[in-house]
Image 1 (tube, rainbow over the protein chains, first blue to last red):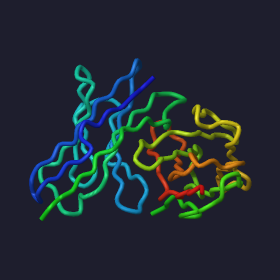
Image 2: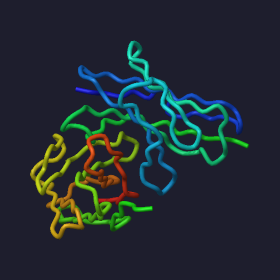
Image 3: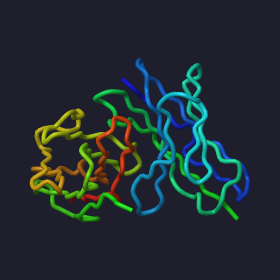
Length: 115
Length: 114
C-alpha cells in the first residue's frame, strides 16, 4: 500500500519570498511522484512529475521538486512566490504499469501568499 | 486547450435518490478515472476505466456505484441510492494512451445529499 503525508496543512508566505512545501511518501514498490495545484473553483492541474532520471524536476510556473529516495521525500520549492501562487497544492504517488493513474494523494497544503 | 468537462457543477439530492454525474473526457484519451474529495479530507481514487471496462476500483466503489461510457464521448458515474456520506466533490480525469501521460482533471461536480 502507498501513502502520502504533506507535513504542513497551511503555509503563509510573503510575496517574493521562497517557499517549500513538504511531502513524504511510503511505498513498498517503485513509485511515480506528482505535485498538483488547485486554484479556487478549478480542477487539479499538474505542476510536475517524477518518473525516473534526474532527481530534480522542474515544472510549470517556476516550481521545482527534488526526489529523495533515502528520505522518501518529494518536496516542492519555488525561489520567489507571487500572489497568483495562492492555491492548494497536492502531492501524489502512483504505481507503475496498470496502476499508473491510480493516484494516492496527500491531504493538501494551502499556500497563501501575502503582499 | 482541450479540457475535461463535468456536469453538473453542483447537485443537491435527497438521500436514497439516484444521481448521475457526467464527464466529457479529452477526445483522444483512452483512460478514464473518477476521484472524490469529501470536505476536509484527501482526494480519493474511486475507479479507473479502460477499453470499456473497469480496470481497477477502490473499496469505496461498492455496488451502489457504476460507471459507463455510453456513447464514446461521455463518461458517467452513477450512484444508485445516495447516502449522506456520498456528499463530496467528484472529479473526473482522463489521460492519453502513452503509459506515463498526464492525468487531466475536470473542475469537479459537488454532490450534496440531504
